[in-house]
Length: 254
Image (cartoon, rainbow, N blue to C red; front, top):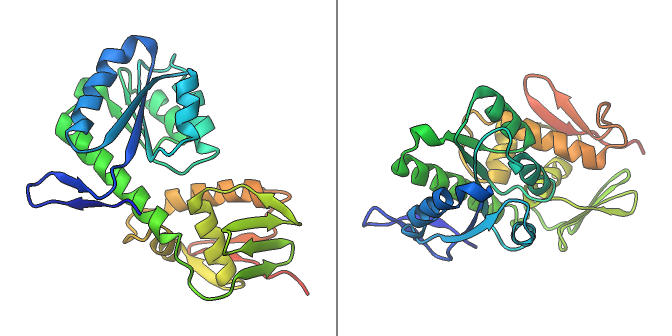
C-alpha cells in the first residue's frame, strides 16, 4: 500500500509514488504546469489534463490518488468535475483559483472539495505541505479499510449484507457501489450493530488517524452512505444519529 513518510533530507519519500491529477481550464495551462513542476520535485507522479476532456474522465476512473483543480473562478466547469469524481471516489480534492471568494469556496466545498487555495496568496511551500498532508491522510485511510476487525466473512442486518472477502455491500440482494471509506464506515457500524459509535471512533478506525475537528468529515460521508443505503435518506432506518455522540447501526427486527 502506498505511504508517505518523512525522509532524513526533509523531502518526501514515497514507497510507491502516488498519482495526482491536475485539471485546468484552457487558459490556465501555464499555471497548471507550474503546479506540476512543484509536485514533481516531491516524487509525485503528476497527470495534467484539461477540464471536460476525455483525458479527465479516464483519469477519474484510473488509479489516481488526488485531484487538484486549477481554475479561474466561479465560471469554471470544475464544480461539475468535482461532483462527478465525488460520486465514485473519496480521493482528496484541492482547488487553486484566481477568485477564491467565499461563494466560490462554499460551492467547491459543497461539491466535495476538501480544501481551496487562493492563487493570489499562493505559496509553493504551503501548497506542497497541503498536498502531502491530504495524500497522507487518504492513503492511510485506504490502507486501514483493508484490515478486518474480526474473522466473520459475512455481516447481515435486515436487508443489508456485507461480503468482507469481496468488500461488497448489498441492499435487498442488490450490490451497492461504495468508495473504500464508505465501505469502511458501513463495515464498522455493522460490526457494532446496535451499539453507539462516536464520531472520533469512526474516524480513528476508518481513517487510521488521531481525530481532530473531524465531525464535518464524518457527517458528510454518513450523508452519502444514507443516500445509497436508505430507502428514505431523510428518515433513515439503518444508520441512526445519536445527538452529541455519534451514530449507530439500528438492529433490524427479528
